[in-house]
Amino acid sequence: SELIERLNSTELSPEELGLDQLSDYARTKEGQQRTEAELLWYRRLMLSATPLLFCIFATVFVLRYNRKSRGFAIVSALLGLIAFYLLAFLGEQLARTGTISVPVGSLIPVAFSIFAIAWLAAAGRFAFAGRIGEAISRAVVNIKSRPRKTSLSNVFLDLTSGLRDFDIGLNLVRYYLLSLGFFAAVFVIFTAFELWKFAGTMENGIWLLVKYLFFLLPFVYLQLSASAAMIATLATYVIKSRQNEIITWTSAGQSVYRLLLPCLLFTIMLGFANWQVQERIAPVANRIQDDLRLQIRSRGNVPAVPDKIWVADDAKVVSFRLANGTAASSDTPGQRCSARCDIVDLTVYAFGDDGIRLTSIYRAPAAVWERGRVTVTEAGDRLQMSADRVERASLPAGTVIEGANPFLGLARKPAQMNAEEVRLQLEASESEAERRNFAVALQRKYATPFQPFILALFTAPFALSLSRKGKAATTGYAIAIWLVYIGTISVFDQLGLTGSLTPWIAVWGPTLAFAAIGAFLLSRVRT
Image (cartoon, rainbow, N blue to C red; front, side, top):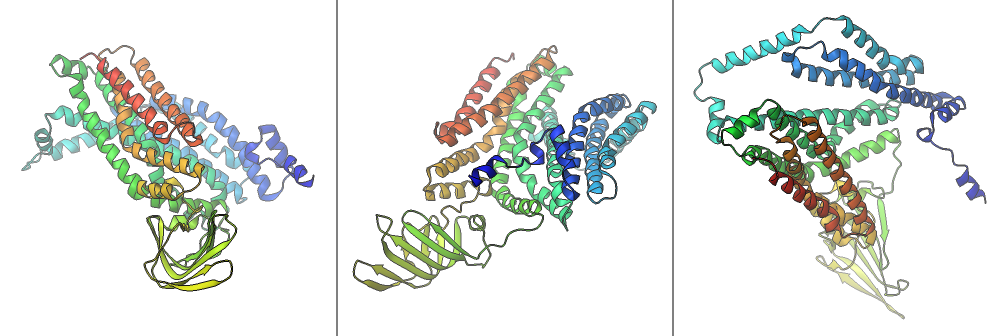
């Protein structure tokens, strides 16, 4: 009854409360808890007003630039967005330290926005931006006009069929980097916004947060790369179509499919780069960023853990220590070891078929866990038990202890492993739910290199339209299909995790289906 009463009277966290409830909650607290609740209340109000502020700011901002300063205006807008949230961080941190009150700290970014809007409304056109752009252009022309033995443009002219491919490729890279940088900045800003309340109240917390965001970048890149490639494809070909360049090329006898070749080659190379990041960089970075996030959220109070590890299944109980002496929590051994791991003080208790009677004990000073099996590296001993006696025998180096899995139940997350490690963990796992999880993750890793190509395949038909009318509608259709594709992937992943679909169908079903849709739409493009 007491346990049920406690469960029924569980206090909701501030993030789960509405505005009225959060206000009442703040009035019942004191000290740091009250400050955090008030900051959350004001933050919700500020974020609710942010779309209106950004709309007004963008309107008065864009009117200040001429057509020659569009690139400078885009960069300035991105810097303004980042400055807004950095001021929000600053205001909250000053409120946490008691330097200013919570309302004043929360209104700092709003006051900055109102001041910027008023100044932009009163200021004249920013001619200096155009002058800066013209100065840079003249400098580039002067550099290019200097005599050289080999011109860079001539090199690309020889490597490709002409400057058109180079121009399309350059625009793809430019819009890809711009989209990826913008999305990554927003992603990092809101992640920092979430963890700031922990990092801002602990010693050396800001440095830990910076390190965490740095090691988070490979994960962010893999999440956003394919979508940024889709936006780059749309931006490149839609702008070319609006400027009548595609009509000119097709009128000269150039096939639309030939115009798409640079985009397809770009997405293939991007898929290869994503695979390398996923296999070589992301696993290590994800382990480090998970540890750093744990430190930040616990405000540096990471619980002490024993150095000896015990694991068990239906047939065996295994105890050991890591050879490097590193203390390990329940998931750390799997984080420290991948396909191979040195262990010491190994003891394996093997039970009979009934799972009750102890039949043998293996003891070894040192062993190695490699490719799903335990091999003794230093001679030990073995105790064989029967109904009436115990026999002792030597356990020579090189002996393989069959069925012993010291890392059963200590597996790392799939994001912390490359494809080979996930496959080995899949083979060693004995839990059905865990096997489904690793099987879906393995197929998802195999599908990563193809995602940019698939997105470009069903995006290009909408961007390569020869008609200048309805570009907004066709772009909307492309984005809608992208959203359906992302949603379908999520649904099929869940069906694969629950066992309703096989892992192969759950991952490759949406990929192949949308590839076929893209090929069909591309075949209908006028050329």
